[in-house]
Length: 318
Image (cartoon, rainbow, N blue to C red; front, side, top):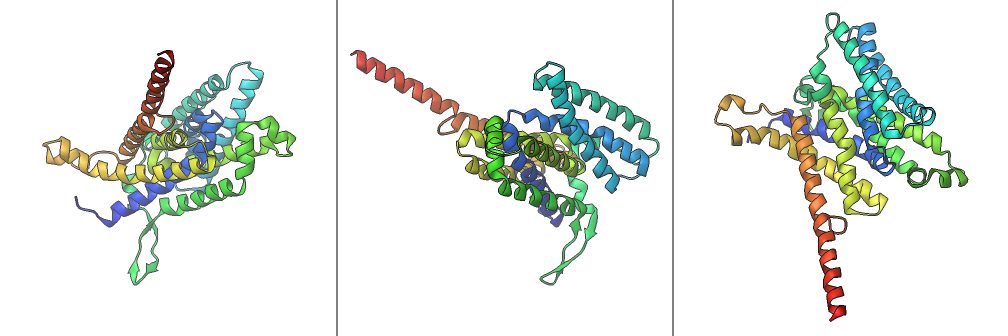
């Protein structure tokens, strides 16, 4: 395997996107709102498309603001539909995000002749191309670093998410487990909820073009869900989810490089695998391993405990 500098930047972009999503994903999992990330990642399409139509360019502040606003509105609309429509939250998510997603696709089709827009990029991203979009060339230890735009966008998002989790950890923990208790303790649970949803929307939009919606959804859910199986302590859950996110990004890109060559005799297919797709696959594999092998909540551990209970009961009878 030959490793180039662009591979390093691809991995850096993947790590920043994965860690940014995993930090917030912990609290979505605890609040049983895992699919809210899915809903927001699809529902931001109208904001993106409208910004495209207005500005005629993808790299614009208007695109980011429009999509983030629609993402926040998705969370608000979901709560309204659930409260006033007398349906559960899962159904309200489905109603809101499918409607907005369909509207976004229609707008994308209408905008396709007017702006530089690739609908498949929305789903799969273009992480392999991010090193080509260089916006900063600082000199570090005598060498020039060509920093891609995706790193400049995702790095502040990752830092903001980390600061949010650290500074509001107590409020997030209490409101995630019991919002009524949080209110009695003087914590504004609604404010914390909408702050979380706003950051989820911003993170989704920031990672959208680079890695696509598929990996955003996977990183919002899978590392946190796997970490939840490995520990019952929230602080450790956050740390483990970040570690799993980093592993997913690194192993995902390495697999995208190596796997086509291992599985195909056609040399033209080498390096043809999507890094974002492989990151999602690696995340699923990691979760599968954790699901079976987690020391306390894994399937094997539960099976062993059941066998021990049966054996103890038999010994007691004897």
